[in-house]
Structure formats: C-alpha cells, structure tokens
Length: 339
Image (cartoon, rainbow, N blue to C red; front, side, top):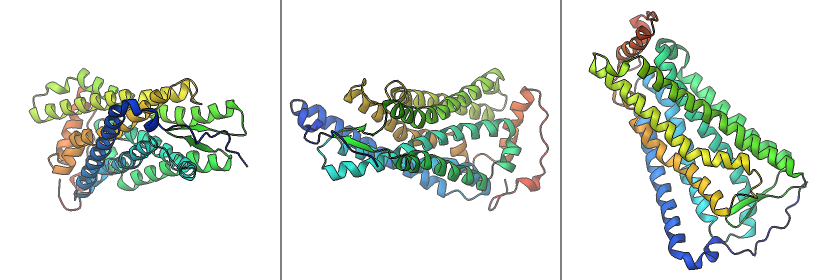
C-alpha cells in the first residue's frame, strides 16, 4: 500500500549531536518539561472551576471554556512530552507508532484553534444579542458543535490519511513524509490539512476580538457612568487584545511554516522545532487568560447576574441606537439560582 523508504535510523539524535552544547540541550528540555507541567495545572484549574458552576446559564457559558481546556490540556500533557521524547534516540518501532499519534495531535491542534474562534464568537454574541444567545446557543447546541468539530477534523487528519495510504515517519527529532506519491500531493496535504483549515479559524478569531475592541472603544463603553459596567468592558478589551497577541505570536510561525515549506525541506530542524514549541506555548498560557476572562470569572463567581448582563448589552445597543429586547423574568430563571 505504501512504503517507508530511506529512513536513516542510524542518524545521531539531537542529544548526541549536541554533546558540546549539553547545557543548552538540558535547559531546553527542562523548559519544555516545566511548560508541560504549567499547562497541565492551568488547564486543570479551568476544568475544576468550570465543573463547580451550578446555574444553567453559567454552564451554558462554561461549556466552551471547559472543552477548550481539555484540548489545551492534551497538547500540554501529550504533545510537549512527545516533542521532548523525540529529542532522544528512539527505536524504530516506536517511531513508526508515533506517526499515528501525530495524526491525532494535528487534529487536536486544529480543534483547539477552532474552539478559540468559538470563544471569541461567543463573546461577540453575548455583546450583540445576549437574550438570543441565551435562547439559542444552549448547552446542547454547544456540545453538538464541539462533537461535530471533533468528528470532522478527526476524519480529515486520521481516517482519510490512512485510507489514502499516507505514511508519516520520524527521523529522530522531527518527522518527514515518505510516500509512493508526488511531492505535489504531499504539499497539498500539508497545505490543506495543516494550513488552510488552521488559518481560517485564526483569522476569524482575530477578526472577532479586534471587532469587539473596536466597537467597545468607538461606542465609549469604557467611560460609562456605571463604574461596574465600564470596568467590565475594559476587562473584555484587555482579554481580547491579549488573546489576539498570544494567538498571532504563538500560532502564526507554525502556520506560516506549513504554507511556505509543507515538505520540510527549507526550514531547518531547529526552526521547525521552535514553531512547534511556540504552538504548544499557546496551550500552556491560554488557560491563564481564560481564568482572567470576564465571562469565565463572572460565571464562576456569580458576580454577573442576568439582569447585569442585559444592562451591559443594553448599553451597547443603546449606543448603537438599537432597541433593547424585552425578555420576561420567567425566561431568565436558572436551575439553582434566580438571576
């Protein structure tokens, strides 16, 4: 069906090749290990906090943050240790097995990027149409979106490559492709699955956050008479800006590499690894931004009642000369708390 060719398992690993720079090798390994631990702890805190909410509306908002923390936790707890293990000489059978793991990690990486887009879109919906968000963007709807996302991207990254006979192998510390296929097909696979499918949610996420900041600043919502509402919009702006910067700094190098060098011939081993490290850093730092996120904090601490959210959304609508929607108090009741 396919062949694995010219895989030089006798090549020295990075550990052996860097014997004269052992301090750098061990420092890099230590930083990666620390990053993995920090990412696991941060995402565990997000999951723990999300599981403690009691109201129906809080769970509705927390669902995306909860699933995002799971994906980021997998990258922190699986992908980073795997990158560390590839820095050492690895037996042939392990290398051949790892190709399927990387197929799965590629899917999880894309799923994570799409979830970041949905987090930004959720903030967008809450600001512009909070009552309708609460009515239609329910817990069940969110779960259906997330499950569909997993199924589609899992198919694209695992099932289709296996059916097409794609064989991904590893040469010590990084992977290369060996097919009975043309270079063009290899490039198209990388560009489509790891390029376009990943770039689209990044662009949409950046647009959502920038548009939110632009509208808040333009509408003067950071200078409202109500100090609580003003502080809320300031926090939203800060979180949106930080999420945008983190996404662009950490993810862009990885995606650009996939587009300009899909078969890994131009970019050096070190350059390729650093794009992976930066991508993983996004999953390590993301949960701490989530813990500071206005929606997440308000939902976990019950500081933001439904009436306050309606008032904040009303401020935006009034500033844009929209009529506020009338929602009966009965529609806004929750399971354990009347908001």
